[in-house]
Image (cartoon, rainbow, N blue to C red; front, side, top):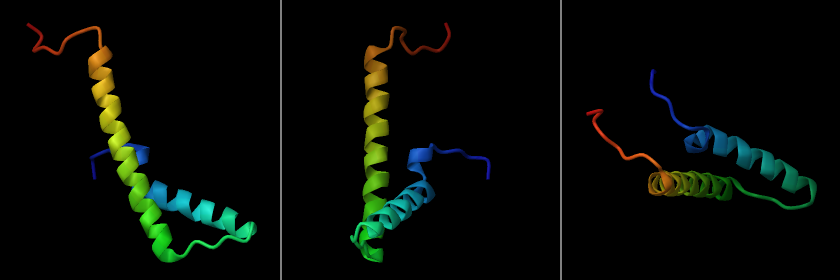
Amino acid sequence: MSEFKTLLSSKTFWGALVAVLASLLSLFGYQIGVAEQSELISIGTSIAGAAGGLFAIYGRVVASKRIGGGQ
């Protein structure tokens, strides 16, 4: 496995974050079921993907140098 991905595009990261949040919420009497946790993971990865795309577009718009072939 030689490919890399960002932390925010990792479902493991989002799963761990949701598990921690669910544990913390249970301390205050709130319960998040398995189905809801799965949905939150999907939402988190979708938002991270969209944010990454928007950040890439923003970076290209404000860039001070153009993309070229080195000529």
